[in-house]
Length: 253
Image (tube, rainbow, N blue to C red):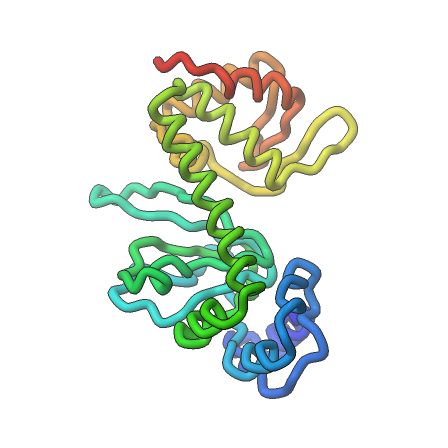
């Protein structure tokens, strides 16, 4: 499906929203294979009523709104979910990878949307109307289970970070964040692991719940110990086990 989106994007760059007018034989993306478990009638409803939309790097996918009417599934790319403070700061809640549902909690809870979603690199997003999403959640156990597992994993990560704010020092929290980034986005290469996610020190600080100067000092110390390197937003980790040991320390500073 993304191949189709990308080809149209190249041929008609001004057209960023595409309707599914004809049935597709499959989802064309490995990370969306869980949708293939849906009965054919449910897949037909998705094909007929869902839309795909292309977002460029740093383009906003959604923003806070009182009555959200859509839920999203990321087909390609990466998405950052965050909230903003009254002072203009940002707190990153997490990242959405291909195949994951996002923007679903306000729809499920019939509540207002309070977070932002922004594209990292170019993204292709499947947009589901609220009524379709709720219908699938209520009538399709496999769909509901898959979404629930994704939501549960995301909430578990947020709970871990909340506990870290109470029980761990800023240095331990930063080590934990980088360790989690290694788990989610790391690719081993010889004697190091490259995190395929471009982050500034300020963004790492928001993930760890500390100030940018504090994050900078911790990263400089990790670099001095030979544990990692951070250049142009790319993290290279040389000793993952040592970082995990630091992350496990529970002494709060």
